[in-house]
Length: 274
Image (cartoon, rainbow, N blue to C red):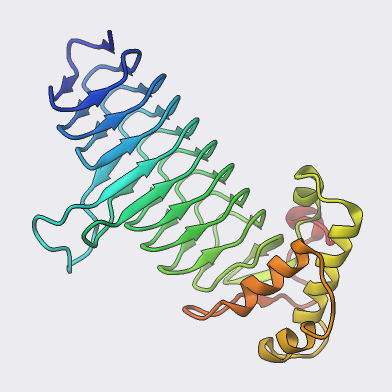
């Protein structure tokens, strides 16, 4: 039997696994699906547009599945928030459902969304992502696996945040952030997130090859189109090729620029290039 506090409001048409815990004052609407081992803490709201996997923690006052902040939303639109397994979503986080018929805002597995994080409609978070306090993701933002987003940063609609990148807190990003880099300022990259890559188990050879690809794109005097054409003359491992393919496909908002080699943030704050 579910462990539901007597002050919680759970619609009989919601589907809860037998061991789901629901705290005081929480609201779970008809149509919501909540998997085994989930904990819904006090005063959280789970709308009927949410499908949630196993062992998720939804923090105090979080609101999951509310309507998108989109003037074009049509009444009666059916859309979802889809959440995988083993996520921690802390206090007062907000995740809005998709804005188009049949669309979804998606959270993968093993993510940590801290206090006050906002995910706009149709945004996507992959797996093992850390998003610190008060980060704001606009609509259709994509966050790839293993990215770390510093607190208070804001991300423009439609941008992509690449795999295993490290983003400094308190910054703004109107352009794509490539995978494997350290980023700061207004869509600037400073180098490769060497510490993050080592922690993720990347070999020294893979890290050096990513660094070589970074230099080709950002330090060798080519524009993006020229750098990608130049890269096609070379043979790359899968990680460096992933970096290059990401940049080659950065069409909607463009890709972040490189910071000057002198000045700017220190390597210790942003991660080195090794």
